[in-house]
Amino acid sequence: MKNILLFSFFMNVLSAHSQSLTVMTFNLRLNTSSDSLNAWTYRKDHAASQVLFYDVHLLGVQEALHDQMTDMQQRLPGFKSFGGGRDDGKTRGEYSAIFYDTARLQWLDGNMFWLSQTPEIPGSKGWDAAITRMVTWCRFKDKTTGKIFFAFNTHFDHMGKTARAESAKMILQKVTTIAGNMPVIFTGDFNAKPADEPIRIITNTSDADHLTDAKSISQSPHHGPTGTFTGFQPKETDDEPIDHIFVKNGVKILKHATISESWNGRFSSDHFPVLAVVVL
Image 1 (cartoon, one colour):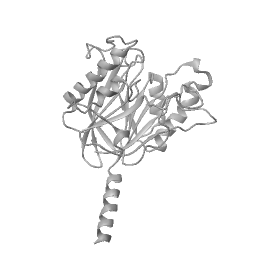
Image 2: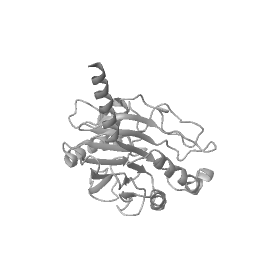
Image 3: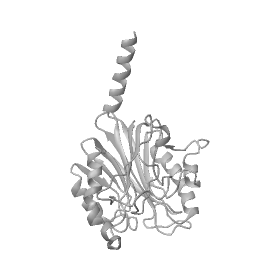
C-alpha cells in the first residue's frame, strides 16, 4: 500500500509539471542613451536569453518602447505579442505588453484600458499620476490542457500615491468584470512593496475580488533575492519587491523566483525579472 501511495504521489507531481506554465514579469527599462553602458543596445540579447533559457510561456513586459518590442520579437522565435504604447494604444510611448509562446498558447482576444477616470480613452492620465499608465489583457487557450485563462499586465505610476491606490481598486473591478470566474494571472511593476497600500488593496482577502501574491502560495520556497529593483547598482536596492505576479480563481504556484543573473557585473535591466511556474 505504501508503494502504491508513493507511486500515486509522484505521478501527480509529474502530471502537474507537464501541465504547468512558466510566467515572467519583466520591466525592461526603456531605451535611453543616457544609461551609457547599461543602455538597451548592450542589454537586449541578455534580456531575451533569460526568457528563452527559463522556457517562459507567458511574459509581461513593462517600459518597452516600440523599438524594444521589435528587438524582443526578433529574439523570441515562436513568440507573438499583444499590446500598444500607453500614449495612443498603438506605437507611441511605453508598452505594458504581453508576449506569448504560440506553440503552447492560443490567443483568443484581448484589449487595453487606462488607469484613469476615463479608462477607455487612450493616453488618459488619472488622479495624481505623473504619467499615463495602462493595463493590457489577453484571453488564452492552453493548447496542452485545453484550459482557458486570462493574463493581465500593468505598470503603476511611480509618483502618485492616490493613483496607485485607485489603480489597485480599478484592476480588481476590471479583472472580475473581464475574467469572471476564469483563472487569472496578473503580472506587473506595481511600484509598491507588499506592505504598501496598493498591494494591501490587491491582496485584501476580505474583498471578494482580491488577487493572491504568487510568492505567498508557492509550493517550493522562493528562490533568489526578495528585492527586485537594482537601478543598475551592484545589487538590489531594497529587500522588498515592487515587481509582482498575482493570481486568482484556482491558479496554483509550483515555484517562484527572482532572477538575478549578471554579465560581467551588469544586469539585463534595472529590475530583476520575476518568474512563477503555475498550474491552472
